[in-house]
Amino acid sequence: MREPHPRSWPVRYVVGVFSLFLCKVLTKFSVEGRKNLPPTGPYIIAPNHIDDVDPAPITAAVVKPITYLMAEDQAELPWYKAWGPWCYGVMLVNRSNLQVSTIKNIQKQIKKKERICIFPEGTVKGDGLKEGKRGVAYFAIKNGIPIIPTAVIGTKGILEKVKSMKRESVKVVFGSPIFTKSGDNIDDVTAKTMQEIKKLLPEDY
Image (tube, rainbow, N blue to C red):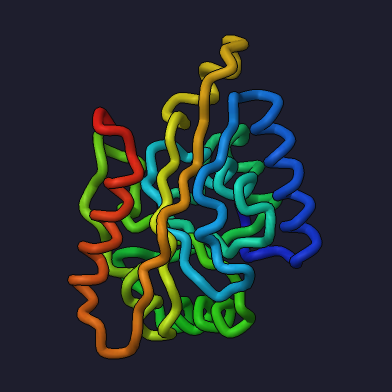
């Protein structure tokens, strides 16, 4: 995937509609808590992360264009997982050496009133809900925008199940907004975000 970047609003909207179609056809897809999404951006969607395909049901649930942040070490995906990020466009982030230019680019998207999706765990590796990184809270507090804790349920290994013609349940749940303001403690907001995500997930997650 070369020079990834968020594509134009119309392209992302069309891909969002197509994602909704695929999710409806290939899975038993459902969405809860859509009323918790603000009518316009900017806000940050903060989901758990269990599979590389997690952005597909999130995109299907929101439909409206989203700016996704993607770790650079996740850029080289197999083609059957890479076509989605390539078509939709993402912003690559070097987690070990965050560049000032990257922060500026994210800020530009926020100033455009974009919906920003950041996976606070930063990885699909490991079991259960993992420790949250500080990026979600940092950008929310810096801009005084809400965080939408989000649960993605049923996507782990979903491509293999689809290949086997199994139509499994996939659900996206949007929790109540976490409102932030300048001066909030970044660690407290991070902890609150992870707590709210956990509440949305099944007990056996």
